[in-house]
Image (cartoon, rainbow, N blue to C red; front, side, top):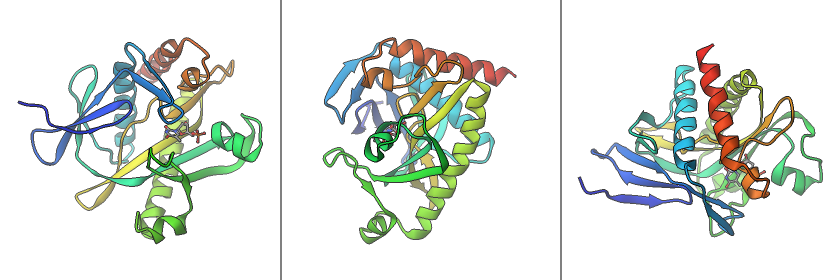
Length: 237
Ligand code: TMP
């Protein structure tokens, strides 16, 4: 069957599935940072992220979170439900890091008195600007009711993932989620991987995520492989 490209993102391509309700996500080796300012090909990243994301989505499904994941097709491709993406990214933070630390002048690793949930407009041209709820509802990007679902769902996903990563000896510092509409329901879409999360080793504080690429720390894929190894071990216990 001829592949029909629906969308090419910075690290994934989305192809039409065999029927209108499905699509095929292909994880590529491309790595970008600074909204595309820095680019590289990291040989094997696509396969690592496809496997890590598949494990996490199956884990979340087990706990009642509906995701777009249907099945893994091969090393880098996943069959998924075809959703209409909601144009906001949801960022969840358990500790200060990254843009939060920079913007508010707090050292990375600072404890937070509550979990932070942020919304950003999904727009590469505008650099994914942060949006508050009234801005999102004013532009009709999502309703207040949908925003409540996004917040509650993201916090539940945070509890589930934090406890899984705890078993892996990893602190889930922060992460980004994307949701979509499928058959009238909001479901989790996109990916959860070291590209979209901050993972810190609990014992050493070592970064095991894309900050190794963003900040030129080296051994990027060794870190991704370590996350996968620990997730596989945690699944066996
Ligand atoms: P930030 O500290 O740069 O705002 O990022 C917070 C988390 O969200 C971090 O784990 C990286 C992830 N993220 C993405 O995956 N894609 C994005 O476009 C942004 C802005 C953040």
